[in-house]
Length: 258
Image (cartoon, rainbow, N blue to C red):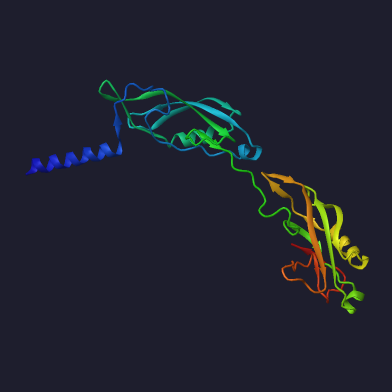
């Protein structure tokens, strides 16, 4: 009974060991190839300087693999830019695991294994490459005149027009510089009566925008169109006070931060 129990115990033990540490007797591979018999890998993180300056480069390492599959004795052979990613590659490689390498019927140690880790814009889905993060882009429609607005002046209703219940509509086309300033204002249509158009244009000149980003770079927005409404607001029109003056808005214009 005792022998049967011991046999069962050792059988289960070696079965569990075989499941947790698989061994492959593949002697036709290259023991110095860092991808050969790899069972688990981790991509290196990116140094702050790499992300900030959008750097690209590589780190070549030599290391040993213990019979149990752990990585040991990591040496940096070459790195470009020098030293920037060495620690990140070392930390990642310490997490790699390998299946056992059987040589001459024994699990053998592998020495002077070589790998090159790369980093940059390339989109390679492999353990030895880390891609630079995507550059930020602004969300929203760049042709929306209220998109990314930083500040404006509330639109003022002319007192005389308010007393006589005279409505107005003025439409402009304009550009927004990469820095967020308004330029190239041009009237399009609507009531071009100076009591409305002058107030609308003067207000528009003072609008300011946050930069609109495309792949991390601020871009110019051209041909943006905006309607200025005075009095009753038509159905579906924007009620933003930067471009709408209700009947009672006859006081001096005030700056509005968006």
